[in-house]
Image (tube, rainbow, N blue to C red; front, top):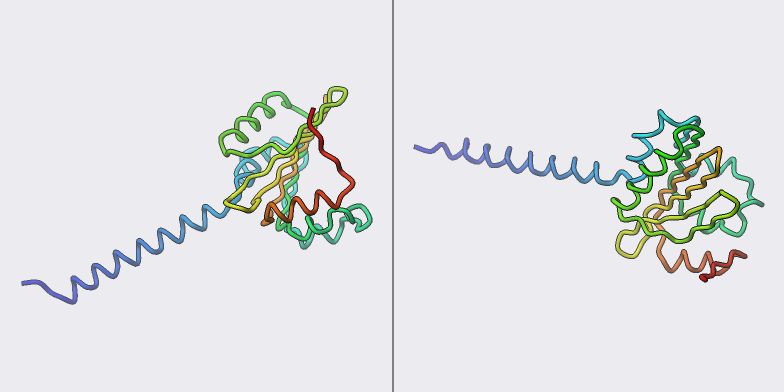
Length: 168
């Protein structure tokens, strides 16, 4: 007839595999969206850097970030990419990435052929990532910040700064 021990072992193995699979999927999902774009395109960049915030913050002059110190405290990881070639095709690729991952544009500034765009990726009531795109005729820079900041904290930081954002 049925071997009860074998049947229990079978179900235990099955549940164990389901749990391990769920943990693997969860850990893969915790990678940031910009992380995937960074990995796909870093070989095409002239310069790329990925570093934990605690290390990078050592080298950032404190007087330069005094206004945004609360924001920098919430950053967990920095990713920087600098390009000088293939700017047009990369820009289209990046814009497609931003749309597909459902980033929200905070602001855009255009001046004399150069543009700066700032995006964020939200998860419930927190901003998980911020991406700054700086594009000019001869360079293209992307800065990705992995964060865990609430919208309330972000608004407070912006309100305390000298930066004024107005719409036309």
